[in-house]
Every structure is written in structure tokens, then in C-alpha cells.
Amino acid sequence: MSQEKAPRIITCQLARKEPDKTDYHMQTYEVKYREGMTVLDLMRTVADEIDGSFAFYDHACKRGFCGSCLVKLNGRNSLSCRTLVPGDDNVLVLEPAMPTTKDFWPEDPA
Ligand code: FES
Image 1 (cartoon, rainbow, N blue to C red):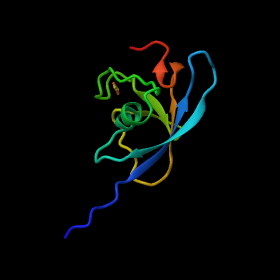
Image 2: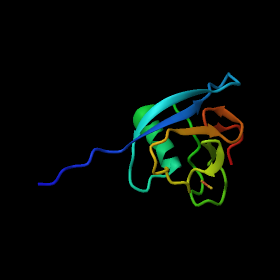
Image 3: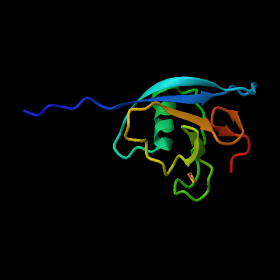
């Protein structure tokens, strides 16, 4: 008889910004981890499965070439399409690395 392991839950704080505002606030989400999950996958999961109002740009190369997925992950610039969700249990803090109109949607998408 096999014992199923409880799914790993990622706690993340994502910067949120309304289109008519200049400041951000942080919102906390709990996301079910998947093997090989990138930070971009995590944002897609939030938008698709948890909070449909969360906006981010997900229409680019996903190969580390274009730079349009650049975010600040725990204060460091990271290409979210090429960055795996870290294996520790620390809270992930994601902020935009460039000016945005809403959440992570860039002012001037590529
Ligand atoms: S989507 Fe192009 S570098 Fe990440």
C-alpha cells in the first residue's frame, strides 16, 4: 500500500497594481507545486486557477531570449521563464522589474 505525499504548497507574494494607480501592494497566494515548475508557470497558475484578475505578460519566447518575462524574484532580476521555483520553503516575493500598467503587464509589451 503506497502512501501519497501531500502536495507541496508554495506561498508567494505577488505585487498587484491597479491601472489607475502608481503604487503596488503585495498579495499572498498559495500555489500547488508541480515538478519542474518555473516562476512563469507559477504566475500562470495564479492567473488561471486562483485569481483571474491577476495580469502578466505570457506571449513571448519562453526560451530566455527576449527578456519580456523579467521579474524581481526575492529582490533579484530573474527571467521567469527560465527560473525554477526554488526548492526551499521560503516565501517567494515577486515584483515587476519594469514599469507596468497593471500587476506584471508591461507598459510597452514586446
Ligand atoms: S519569455 Fe522570453 S526570456 Fe522569458
